[in-house]
Each structure stands twice: as structure tokens, then as C-alpha cells.
Image: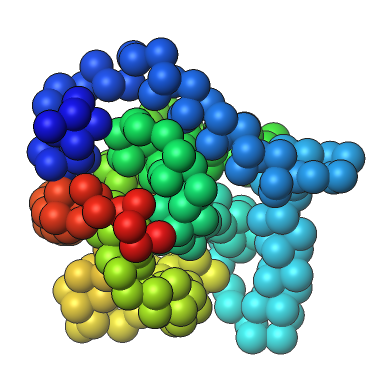
Length: 272
């Protein structure tokens, strides 16, 4: 069994983490991340700035609609929406790109021997760069709107870390399944559309009747948005119930993602 086949047979954890430091693997990871960035911003003069401009433009439209038409009242509503969009943009883009990552890179999978886990890892790396642009821009815009951050901003780091682990498990699961069941792409698109409105991106959690909070908190995306909001908007310590719920989802997805990746990855090149 080759080193790559051995890695894939052991799941996305591999035999050990140093696969990341191998020359060929680093090259493939860099190549994939760079290809994604070039494809996304080809002929775009503002490049990565669109990562920040898109949620800003969405914030302006949504703030006008929901503040003046839907009459949602919330303190610093524009900042509330923007904080939710920072989390959601990272969430939805990783899921959409990660689900189709193996199929989208079929030519590379057929030509080069390398750990297949590098493919979804490149999706995380690319979108993490987008997030690293979006958060500072959020801080600047919030300050411009007169909103002051507090020491609670430090909670953005564990929030992003836990969110990223959740996404790793998710895209290894859906990405592996998509190789064999091409409907996964469309299932994810439909899910994300419904998930957006079922999560408190455009509205505060306080709008949900308290009797439904327990059920509502079972939604991992609601937990994710609220964790970001603790750091970026509400100036509160994260709710341990939400952290525990998201942690359970994350562990479950990591185990499921590893199982299906381990089961399907040795034959990816034959099915993509």
C-alpha cells in the first residue's frame, strides 16, 4: 500500500499530521488555494475586498428593509446584521465549495498522488483568508457606525476555531458523499437557503419566544451565529449550553466525516 493510500485508508486524520509538511502536499495545498482565489476574483479590480464588500452591501439593503419595512427594532441593528453575516458567509461558502471540492478537482485527483484530505483543507484555507479580511473590516465599519467593541472580542478566536472544526467534519462528510451521490450539491443549496432564515442572522435571538429557545438552540448554525455575536455585538460571555450543543454537533460530524472519507477516498479517482 502506498503512503497516500495508507493515509486515505486511515481517514482524514492520516497516520499523523506531518503530511501537511511534505513538499508535494504543501505544493498541492498552495496550488488549490491559489486557484480558488484566482477563479473567484478573476478580472476583479478589488479582489479580496469583495469578501468584505459583499456582506456590507447586503447589510445596507437588509437594514433598510427590516428596519423600515419589517419594523424590527434592535439596538445597532445594522451591526447586528453584519455580525451575523460575517459568520454566515464563512459558513455557507465553505459548505457550498467543500461539498463539491473532490468533484471540482477531479483532474488533479486522477493525475497526482497526494492525500485527498488536502482538497477540502484548501477550501478551509481559502475561506479562512476571506474571514481574516472580513473581521477587521467589520471592526472598522462598526466603529464608524459608533459601535464600540469590548474585551469580549477575544471570544472570536474560540468561536472561529470551533466553527472551523464543525465545517471540517461537515465538508468531509458531504464532499465524500457527493462523489457517489451528485444530488448532495443541490441538497446543500436547498438546505442553506432554508437554514439562513432559520438562524438568527437577520434578527436577534430575543425575537424567538422563550418557550422555543431550547428547540431553537438545537440548530448548530444558531449556536454559531450567537457565538460570533458574543464577541462582535452583544458583549457577553458565550452560553455554555450553546457551546456544548455545537461541540456535540462538531464531534459527531468529525466522526461521520472521517468514516465516509475513509470508506470512499481510496476510490475517489474512479468515481469523480
